[in-house]
Structures are given as structure tokens and as C-alpha cells.
Amino acid sequence: MSETPRHHSGTVLRHSSTLSLVLGAVLLAGAATGAWGDPPAAPPALSADAAPVPAAGQDPAGAALSPQQAEGLLGANGDRWGAYYSAQEYADFSRGLDGRYLGVGLSVGRGQDGVTAVSQVQAEGPAAAAGIAPGDRLLRIGPEQADHLPVTEVVARLRGLEGERRVGSSVTLAVQHRDGEVREVALRRALLESRQVAVDRTDDGVVRIAVGAFTSGVADQVRAAVRGAHAGVVLDLRGNSGGLVEEAVGTASVFLDGGPVASYQDRAERRELTAARGGDTRTPLVVLVDGGTMSAAELLTGALQDRCRAVVVGTRTFGKGTVQQPSRLADGSVLELTVGRYYTPSGRSPEGTGLNPDVPAPDAAGAPALALRVLAGLGRQA
Image (tube, rainbow, N blue to C red; front, side):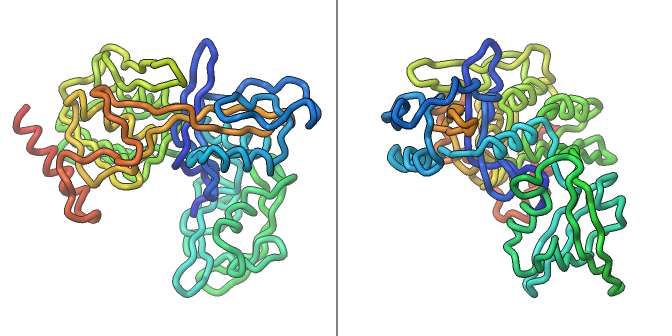
């Protein structure tokens, strides 16, 4: 598991002169959310007597709710995708949407033997500077034995527990190298770039672009990667569980020349999302999806599929098509409540059903090769 932000369920929006919709943005280690940017600042704190628990359908902004009351409100509404976040958790989430995260630059995993090992090290991060390498065993984090903690807890401690989440705070690790040498290293946490776009160019002019999440700047990175892709593009959205909708719409604009991308229901009002003019509508395009493709990634997939701009290959997507609104409570915490759904250009909602691929992949391992074969066929038709 990586200490970089991960993205899955959740969708958020807010009202302002410019909206920054987020579908499915997530905090590390399983805490999930999404956002139209930050919710409005809360008014001055009210006493519990002056701010009763809001009724269903009411905006809870500014209410003086305890964490237990906020969680109870979610349960009373039966809100599957709603969530409650402390002020610190929401700040961490917002930072992740900017393509940054606080940590030491490590990804860890646990094998069947129960050993906690380093799976990836981010270049130029604190862990890399200390000489930690993939394959090293993580023995201790602070005073705790790493193997005795859930992996999610290991990741949380790498990023910093409550009161430690700041640039320059320190975490001490005991690490065993593959040659058996054990070292104790003190790492200082830093703001690191979360790399969400990976590009691979083949000799025959095909560009494969994997997008892990729609954080800030992703659309521009995809646009730059597409240049020179004369033989076609495979846009890999497998495991992409959301992010900034403006980035998903921006990515759609790379391949569309204006027109609808999606619409969403904001309580009683329907709003439209449209692509910018001037996108590349000629280069053959295949979108690769799986059961981990959700939220903003489903919005993008549905747009390209409905507009007949891409052939979708893989397996049925996750099925997350609802919209949440974040409201800042009196103590600075944030409560997200589901307020509506979004729809593809043809009026489909992925909620609960997902989107079916045009070309189903018989098995997950063979999906990338199948995508290339489909792309080759599109190239012959062009």
C-alpha cells in the first residue's frame, strides 16, 4: 500500500462562481471523499442547544455536531457514500487533490509470510535519500513492530498521526536490507508530488497513458502525452477511482471538439458539463477499464463511449454515480451528504450498475493486449 493519496468512492460539490467538482477523491489508507473544492467556511460556532441536529434534506453547514452526531446523521439518512472528516483529514484530502501528499516516499506491502516490506520508493523523497530500497524489510516504525500492525496503520504512521502531520516532522524506522544489515533511520516528512500519469510509447507510434486519479494538472499531462500518437492511444483507467471532475472534463476535451461530457443533478437543478473546443477527434482511441474504474473515471468513460469517440475494452466498471456536497461544521470538520446523481451524455447513470465495455476482456491479465488489438483494428479503419 502506498502512502500517496488513493482515490475511490465519494463525490462532492459546492456552489461558487467557479465549481471544482470532485468525484471519488480519497485520503490515504481507506478514508474516502470527493469534492467541488473546499466547502464554505463555517459561521461562528453555535452551542449544542442553538444548533440541533439538522433534519434530512437540510444543509448541516455551521451546525455544532459532535463526531458521534455527524455519524448518526449519516446512518439516519442511509447515506452509502456520505462521510465525516475531521478538519485535519479534510486538509490532507485537499492537499491530495493538488497532486501532493505529506509523507516520506514509501510504499509498503505484506506478503503471505507476514513480513512488511518496501515495495516502492519515490525518487528524490526522504526514504530514497536515506538509502531505503525496494525489497528492504520494515521492522519497526517508531517503537512499534511493523509486522504487528495492520498495513493501513503502518501507512498512517508513515504519514503521521494526529499532531504529527506537518512538514519536517520526524518518524524513525528500523529497516533490514536484503543483505541482512539492520539500520535505524530518522526521516523527516515532506510534501511530495503524487504521480498519477504514466506514459509508455511503442516503436509503432502507439501511446499508452495510465491515469491513476484525476488530481490537479492531469488533463494537461494527458494532452502533452497524446502529441505524436499517430498510431493511436490506449487510455488506461483501470483502478482509477476518481478525482477532480474539472480534470476529467479536461481530459475529455483532449479527445472531443466541444459538446456534452456529463450532467449532474444538484438537488432540484440540472447542470451540464461540456468539453472545450479543438480536441483531437481523429486519433484512434481505446479506453481500458475494470471494476476499479469509478466516479470521475466512469464519467469520462461514459462521455467517450456515448459520443462514439472511443472503444471501451475491459470489464464492467464499479458503478459510482452519485454526488455529495461537503458542509463545514462549526468546529471545522466536514460532513458530506449525497445530494444527487450524474449522467452520461445519453442519460445513463452508472450508479449501482457500472458501465459495460464495448469489447469485454475474458480475463484481466489479457486486457492490455486485447486493447492493443482493438486499437490496431481501429487504425486499419481510419
